[in-house]
Amino acid sequence: MQKDFHYYVIRILSEKAGFNSVESQIIAYASQYVDDATEHKPIVLPEKYDFQHTRLKDNILDPVCTAHKGIQFLNDFKTLVQMMIYMSFHFLPTEKYSKQKKYSYITTPNSPFANDLINKAKNNFLDKDNKIYNLIALGIALHTYADTWSHQNFSGRFDQKDNNIDNICLWEEGKWSKISYLNQIKNNILPEIGHAEAFSYPDFPFISWKYNKIKEKKEYVRDNLNICIEASKYIYDFWLFY
Picture (cartoon, helix red, strand yellow):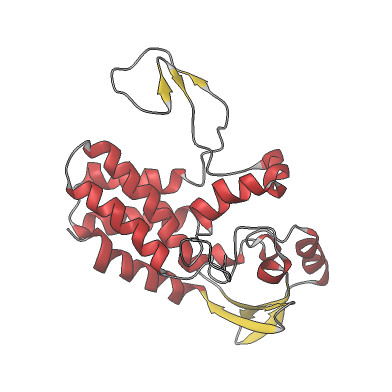
């Protein structure tokens, strides 16, 4: 999902769920910022702050990088980056890893792992301590939770079985139309990490599309609008209402 959902839809749902306008703005801003936080080097702040935090020492802030843009994409092949950024914030696996013999990194909508994440964020907020911090944490958790819908059936690791796709088609004017051969080639050149080979199609809320997973020899058909509506309903009905 993109800014249209992570910021605007979350902003609306927050107010509808009972948060005031200031609280809703904090939640929505934090949700969207997960896609914008490319800072990965220590930041020198203009002054010292009173509050204590593990990532703040005197006036030096050690930021958490949750997104890659531009030349930073070259780091995507690093396993640590896939674990700390993609799997943690954008392609949450279905369940926690506990040394299972068979473990799937595939993202699943409203998965048990996602439920654990969002419940923890909600429970922390209900404690009412450090309210702004907890609102920000809730927004971040909602980003990852929402992405379990848009990023379903992909994983945040470099893996052909999970992420190598082709034969992308869009539903246009009542029929399926293949994307151009050139665009398909461009997509296939990209690494099998997340939905790179699917371009931004998983994140567009206004399209219906389909694709084949090469290793699985299986076709996936998606109606992104219905997926976004379902995600909105779950967020409103179960997580934001307090």
